Image (cartoon, rainbow, N blue to C red; front, side):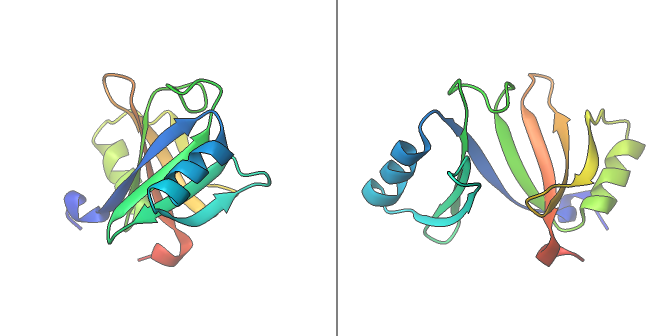
Length: 128
């Protein structure tokens, strides 16, 4: 499969310092739907609006970082195994291994030259 066809869509992950406040802002004030929350109390939430707007909120101590690192773009792909092989073969440095996360996504991470993180992931229901 041509590499560019492996990609599906992306979501911006915003670090937030107060999840209830941020959730209330996006849901009650801006009208986003809350589609997913992880952990109790939530440390991660997925909110959507319209046909293709998706924001992910991640609880963080510093609003400029998630997990102590730079910005994240969460990129959904059609075949994470194939993309991982292609990027390894192309010599792309992959600082985190391809693994299945406890929240059900199979993913790995790459870092761009400016330190921005791209998490490349596929859900169970997205298997080829």
